[in-house]
Length: 206
Image (cartoon, rainbow, N blue to C red; front, side):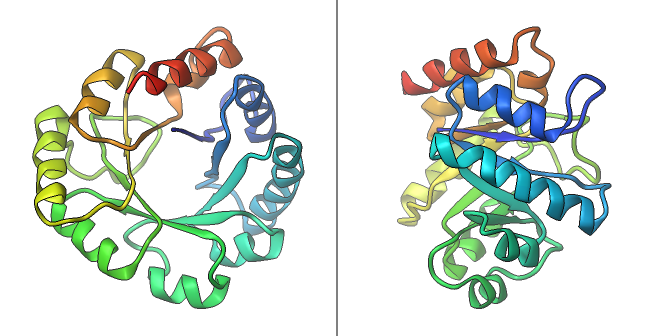
């Protein structure tokens, strides 16, 4: 499974990016607008939600639980400094997805106990699309963490994130990831739709 994470560039805003990756077959969008106002996030979320509906694609809102609820988004992704998952579940109810960010196995254990629907584990390597980066994990770190998950019976889906390129995907998927979250690798491609399609086919091989 591919999760696309928006990141505004000189070429495309979040809406335009989403259209291109949807055309390439992506069905899991995370709207991330770190430096935008709440009104800007809410407006873009409402527009992208309508855009996703004909494709039956899921829209996840980064950080903003209230906006996810107001716009009818399919879920929310929570960083370590965002609203606690249990509080978000009370606000959103039982249907929407709740994802959480992890950097270590201890993070994963806590998120598992909180009952999140999926975990974003990273960063795989240094990335310029995220500020205040946690320590880089690398492929060996992923293998170690996924092994600990198996040993402890943790089966929550885990999505690898952070500076991942197409060449990294086979190793990461073989290590045990459920999916891959990408931003820069897709947005830097000459043809975003074709790059999205290529990456989805690559992930499907595992």
